[in-house]
Each structure stands twice: as C-alpha cells, then as structure tokens.
Amino acid sequence: MANSTRLENQDIKFGILDQAQQKAIYTLALSKAHFSTATVWGYVQFIVGIPNTILSAIAGASALSQWQDSNMLAGMLSILVAILTAISTFLDPSDRAKAHWHAGNQFQLLNDKFQIFIDFDAIAGSSPHELKQKLDILIDEFYKARKENPVTPYWSWKKGLKEAKQEQRQV
Image (cartoon, rainbow, N blue to C red; front, side, top):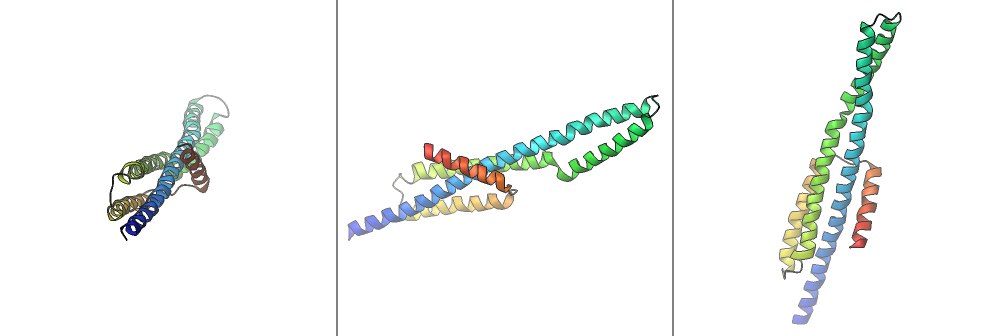
C-alpha cells in the first residue's frame, strides 16, 4: 500500500514537472518573440525617423534658399515630412519597442522562475500538494504577464518557439 502511494506521488510530481517544463518553454519562446519584435520596432523607428529628420532639414533649407524652384521643393518635402511624421505618430515605434522589450524581460524572469522550480523545488522533497501550490502561483504570474503585455506577431512567436525548443534540447 505504501509503495502504491509512493508511486502515485511520483506520477503526480512527474505531471506537475511536465506542466512546468511546458510553461518554461512557452515563457522562453515568448521572451525571445518579444525581444525580436522590439528589435523590429527599433528598426522601424530609425527607418521612419532618420529620413524624416533629414527631409525636414532639407525642406527648411530649401525654403530659405534663393534657388528658383526652391518653394516647390520645400512644399513637396514638407508634405513628405508631414506624411512621415503622421506615420511615426500613428505607429509609435519607440513605445512599441519599449513595451515589447519590457515584456521580453518579464517573460525571461518568469522562465527563470520556472527553471528554478523544475531544477530545485521539485527535487527538494516537496510534497505533490506543495509543488502544485507553487506551480499554481507561477501559472498565475504567467497569465497576468500575458494579459498585461502586447501580443507578438505570428512570425516572431514561431521564431521564438523554434529557438526555445532548440535551447531545451541542448540542455
């Protein structure tokens, strides 16, 4: 009878660890996905912002120049600058990059917590009930982070998941 209970407890612990391992992979994938997305939004900020700055300077200089068609050039450049400014304001790449960077860090921290749970808490002799309680707390943190953070694009999620699974295989 005692042997049967011990085997049942081991099965329960194995199930809890399996669920924790799945969440560890998932949090690592989300962390990587958010970091990739943050990088892309950082590039968008430069792709829109640098030409906007340069064109603004040229438009201002051409408006003040004595060149014959300078007013026409200044007008066209001003329209282009207005379009780029509107795009930049609408997309707000800087804030999006910051939000994804923050989310990446948050999911990396969660991944670390799941790994500590798997590597240390599970082998520390805790009962299945204690392990389940600790896992429930971590899962609540996970869903809270998912709710509070932006969604990643599909391409970055797939990339992050692939990298996370490759990292798990190497361990």
